[in-house]
Length: 86
Image (tube, rainbow, N blue to C red; front, side, top):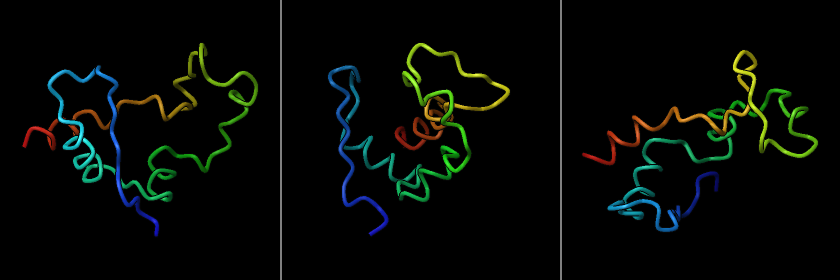
């Protein structure tokens, strides 16, 4: 099975007035959560791991020209907000 059977969202108390179950449903609508969809969205098939191979990515500033650290981007915010507020 390539798609998740369920999506569990836990905002750890930081999402004031956010229905976590609804956010999980909306996330499944907006993002392809299959392994292929995640790799495609984050562009993980590129050799981008040299910077993070030692000491991880914490505390490093990504090079915008190289478009690394795609997991730090907030490109789904507008789509999530739009779908959540329907």
